[in-house]
Length: 273
Image 1 (cartoon, rainbow, N blue to C red):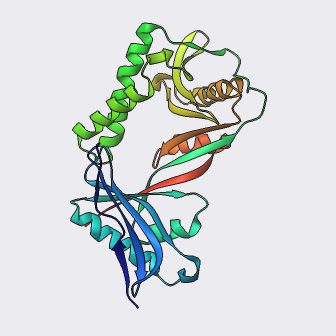
Image 2 (image 1 turned 90 degrees about the horizontal axis):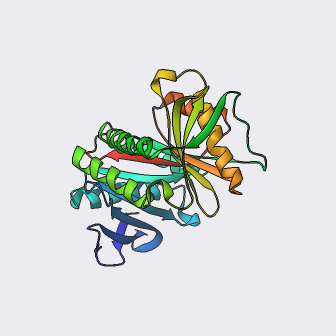
Image 3 (image 1 turned 60 degrees about the vertical axis):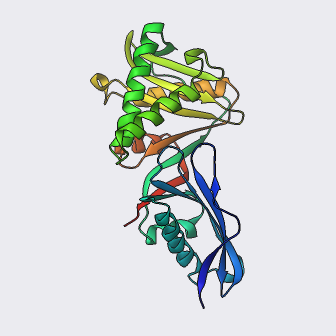
């Protein structure tokens, strides 16, 4: 039996410069599933596998593997050099599939359930708002660090810098006065030791950035910064808090695990040869 992809719509060209297309997964012309492909809005050489489904009666027969490989051929024709897929942490079969096909973890999203009582900070530690001068430095350092995060993973500097600047502008349109935003400086014994940026969404809080001053690392301030983020979340009535961590950031991964954060989504990617 032959597994193929059959387009179900013309190639879609979007206003942001991306393209996308939906396909049926077919076995000898019989529809058994679906694939949805798109290009990344900031990284034109990266395609996104937005959806890959095989219906229950046809699972376990290699249909998904063939469909995924066929999808890679499609986006190669679009000029893409990378493919990425977001896989829910509880989708074990999907995770096994992409791993077997050579996808590796780029980053993952973590989440933690919160109680009703804000956690206490260690003695001598307190959080406060940034001054205007501190915010200006924080913004400059943050956009530069975020740019490096992507360039170190192979993204061209121009694209990485554009994404960094756009993301900060989109998420902080009014700077530190942006509604539902908390950007705090942590002091210990009166000395600034780090910053944390928390967004308060409708149903949860999300930590966009947490930085412990490298001069004071190894003293537990990273944990205190995360506790400060959780205090903001609980004070705002949120019972969940999430964040993103890049693969290979071992100290951060260990910290989050020790605090009870669990993976919810894996971002997997693969270089197309």
